[in-house]
Amino acid sequence: MGLQTISVPDSIKQLPYGDNAERLIDLANERIEAFMLMDGSVIENFVTCDFHLVDQAIGWMIDNHLATGNQFCELGSGFGAVAMLASLRGMDSIGIEIESRLVEQSVRLADDFGVDVEFYCDSFVPRDVDGLDEWTTEVSNVDTEASDVYDEIGADLDDFDVFFAFPWPGEHGFFEAVFEARAAVGALLMTYRGRDGIHLIRKI
Ligand SMILES: C[S@@+](CC[C@H](N)C(=O)[O-])C[C@H]1O[C@@H](n2cnc3c(N)ncnc32)[C@H](O)[C@@H]1O
Image (cartoon, rainbow, N blue to C red; front, top):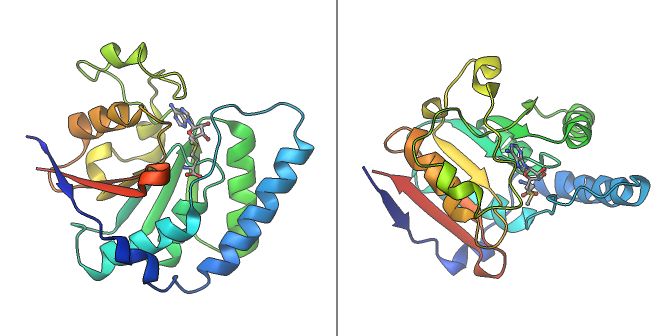
């Protein structure tokens, strides 16, 4: 088993946004700004990706039939906007986020916008992954505590076809280690890498 990089062309930036995506992104950004101003205690690990670019990348992935199925999971979903964009594109989508205040905001946004996404408040890190301990000293922006969230979801990581994450710089290896250990062969992991744009890998 291994990981294969799929090259994502720069031209995705020219692709149209999904139906209602821009309206959702505007509302999400408005709520995120209000939340940051209102909330006294900063959630240090929370920053948002480029929602427009990720929507275009999801559209490109769908148009090119790259996913083996329709199940989408955002790991560390923050305000849940990417999970919602995937749902607007027709995927069955969930988000897993450890900060309860962010999960509350995600549920409210999804309800108000009328988009069907389930959010789970816990750690996405599965139990008993061999070799993951080595990473715990390397990552400081992911809570590396393992959880039983997959029992609550009623699905395991190998039930999902596409994962999305926005790792902090230098921490994408942790997400890849979880993905390689537990995702199904053929599944995709899409990550947003800041200035380096979108990165896509497949488990082979
Ligand atoms: C960089 S933010 C990205 C948020 C969102 N995915 C986006 O792109 O806008 C990373 C998020 O992961 C969450 N997080 C960190 N460790 C986690 C864990 N073990 N399980 C679930 N969420 C986690 C943080 O609270 C934060 O909201």
